[in-house]
Image (tube, rainbow over all chains, first blue to last red; front, side, top):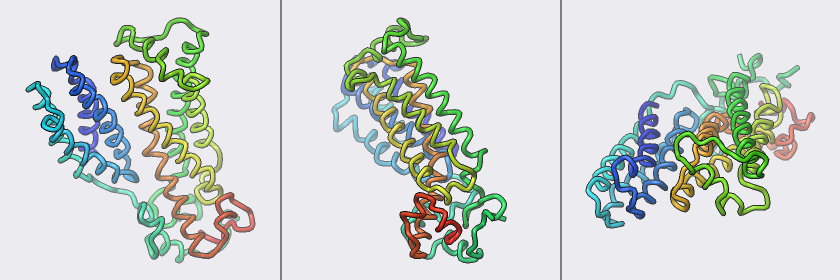
Length: 133
Length: 186
């Protein structure tokens, strides 16, 4: 989970970095950061919980985009370029850190459509009566 | 084990227990309170809005064109959204993942779009208006924090619906929690 905490902080940093690093007037650069920042932070926060840990991977393409953005969008500010690439590399790398999964979830999301999953096998072991009586 | 605690098969805990649900309900209530406050400003019931960091930011955002795009201000819609989330979080007992899947799935679906719209509005603040609104950011954070913990319960309900389907029991009846199908599928 610590990796996704760092990614959330990096997303929030992206929202603030233009003002902090002094290129707030460069509209293309700041727009890019102001769009990516909240989205990266949101995906990271959602993946703090074990059942939705998989959402961390949505940040992989976003991190890769941050690595490419200075060249695709033609950043003319060195601080912005370095910031985008460092944050992009960190976000991409940390998105792959799964962390500990301590609870079990009946086989997870794929068990909603697949057959013979953990929850289906466990349910068969229990007697089929109204459990609430 | 699961007979007493209502733990779904193959799970190590019950995602519908009160300990799991109460934090989400409390978060939704806080979101509701803040959004109501912002809506009151937007409806001109109160004429100032609290803004500790961004000067004129909150006023700019809360009176922007985007916020008036619908007949009622976006703060009021947000308040309504949080209220739905809080209600959908509190209705039903600790076995509701199989006794009333409809509310659990509605809960999961209500939390998702609210979070999505909040994040979209956070993006629009600086991009369109070059301003930030502190309390809007706080409500957005609240709605994003609610998504993760609401999803595990929805997962338990969706897995239950899958077992209902495999057992060839009516999915319609199971979804709405008809008495006649209760306990036919675990």
